[in-house]
Length: 144
Image (cartoon, rainbow, N blue to C red; front, side):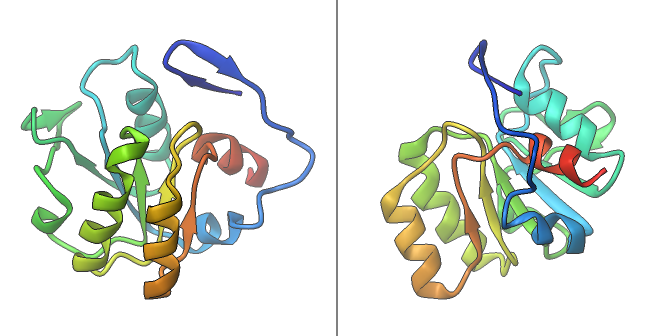
């Protein structure tokens, strides 16, 4: 299950998501909307992902999260990333896809509850692998 805005949502744990190959091949993940507040879902999932990937927190409101430099935007990252994991409102997703394209990211993964037809269309138009409304934590657990 993934916690989203304090509400529990369950996902099937029987089969891995078709995009789980993205997780298997990735080495670096930018977490857009990574909160510095430990009670937030983005903090818990971002911290979990740090055990398996090189993580770049992206949050313009803080300079550091748990000893890791936080970047104001994807354009500020020191290297290209394999996945941009998005913890932002759905109406902001298309802008994150544009930023990911500019930063030459290899894929965008929007968390459970985050989706946008316009963002999906833009990603598909650019040939950018795109996952939405899917919890990266739940999908990663299926691989372990």
